[in-house]
Length: 104
Image (cartoon, helix red, strand yellow):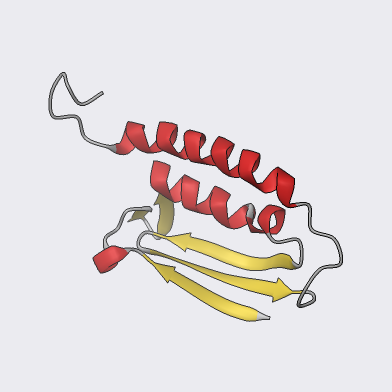
């Protein structure tokens, strides 16, 4: 069992804000949450315990079941990553401030 903390660059609050003591996730925060929840899809020997996304970091507990799983189906990992990457780009574009007509 591993306790993991992933922090944003320079501690920027990219994942959301705290409003009245409750974390409100931004689009990037929702992507961070989805990526965390997808870890077992990419690493068959890892399961998740509790986790929380904060405005500038993620805390979570990973449980590694065995060192090397007997069967790993690598051929499915790339399509999953491509789909997630495209979805993440779509979500992140909503959060990026626009500067002009060329920033589409």
